[in-house]
Amino acid sequence: MRGSPRDPLCGQTLWCESSPQPEAGLLWDWVEINEGIVAMADPMGVLTNLRLVSDEGAVMTSNEAALHLNGLIHQLPWQDEVWRSLRQA
Image 1 (spheres, rainbow, N blue to C red):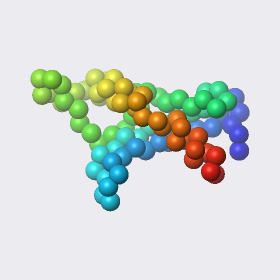
Image 2: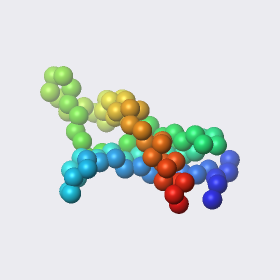
Image 3: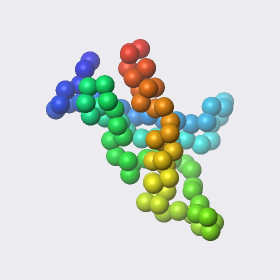
Image 4: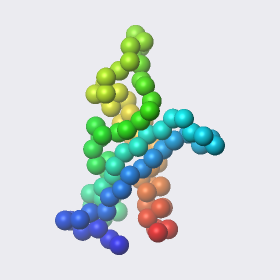
């Protein structure tokens, strides 16, 4: 079912290591912002079990980590995977 401006298509994406028992993963919400175009719904709302550390070895705050996680997500082909899944549904 197609989304509409008042009720756009939306969902969640989970990327994790591909092993029988994945131990690292990223999860975020997405929303269709225009026909055929999906984007992260909230770039600050990435959930993960990863702990990022600075060059000095300190654990990054969630705001500091969000910048790095968004850079990583930007490199993933997740939009293509969302559309592949939607076409199969």
